[in-house]
Length: 135
Image (tube, rainbow, N blue to C red; front, side, top):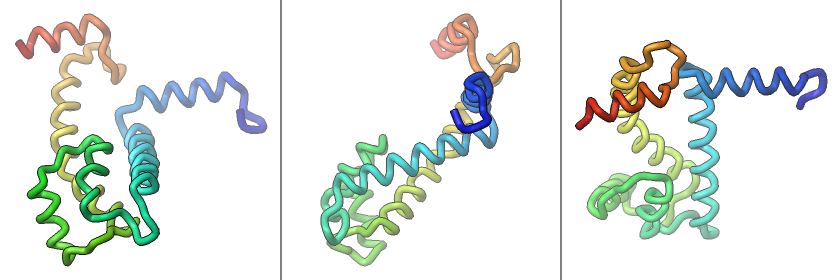
């Protein structure tokens, strides 16, 4: 715990962040994405950056599934570099993630209708109702 902060305060703050569906949740998610993106860049990086032919593999590790054609098209839009520096890598990942945000928001909006107590989380019973509704 930080100086002057009790363990209980830390737990309460963590619990509030975990149950939040607003800015705190997005902030935590954003920080996790940045940390993951940095780790993947470091893993694939050579002195000049990430080799262009490894971009698809790097994206797959980050949970994206681009086709070979999508990767080639993006690289062509960047001028066909042989290596991708960290700034370019982050910009590309941000663009790809930006395409997912509307889909994630749609899913969250759908799930909210089953959150009958409004706590921002689904109980086991609420989750079962979601699953029955998707059959």
